[in-house]
Length: 205
Image (tube, rainbow, N blue to C red; front, side, top):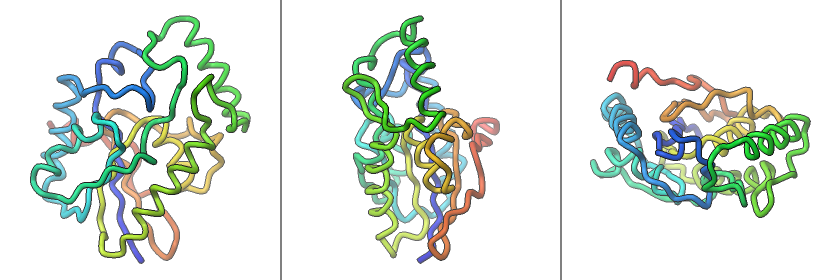
């Protein structure tokens, strides 16, 4: 069963702009720039025939791909695509204490300690398990040959490790701008990244 996945990160939110910690427990809207980014992506790819749109359960992903949803492309929310939970830090400004805590945690993750999480949050390995459940759903739909997936920065990094069969500790090897595209083929049970962190739709808008 062959598929082509267009996987994008959501557009900018005010939390992104202001450096406020934004995870699974923060259901923010796109800001004006984020809406423009989503529209630019739609205008560039609106003639691509997507069989399905998949998003996380968080509205910033829905809003990013609203053009495709409004034109009638079937849409399904998969909570497994949600952002990693940053626990007690969510909604807090990116000040020195958070910068220090994130730097320490990121160093742990890069050293392979991917079962660690922030207090009341999720570890990358926990996220990978729910991402696998979501991916299994997407891959099980044999009639959907080309699908659009909209998700989040950190969970996207985890997913890219999974698709490329890289250790989860290699998350930071991948770029992930707002509304960036990763186009991925799935042929004979293997994934191949065809385009990475592609933002040409923003340049042309």
